[in-house]
Image (cartoon, rainbow, N blue to C red; front, top):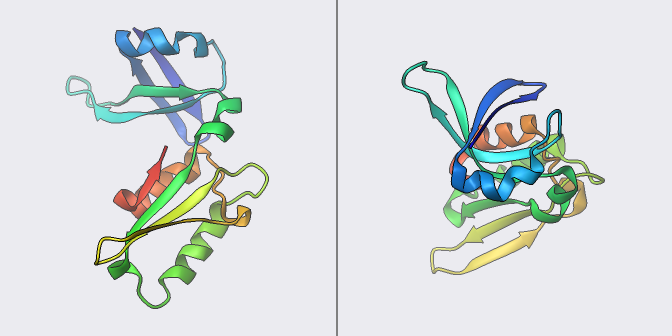
Length: 145
């Protein structure tokens, strides 16, 4: 098991890695190391502080190979001006050099599913601020994996 503080420009969060997860991730944890952490944000009922229960840790060199952003929409959500708003939003978060592959998955009323890989000019830069913004603004419509 491991406990550590994850620090970025948005603040500090305490991270918890349970024993079964720790065994597979321990080689990636080093003091002052740079990592990308994926997990579940929970509230400690005793202290009422937020903690991140870690499920996965990626080293910077692994992020580009493994991370992708997928927007999932049903055709009923696509109204006039929607795609233009999405395009402008993505432009603010994108970095053609360091962004990760970004996709739109569109499902139709008759059950068909279309996946579109966006051009590099829309590839999202996977920093904490951008990923939090995506989750806040688009919630269930965005998957970061």
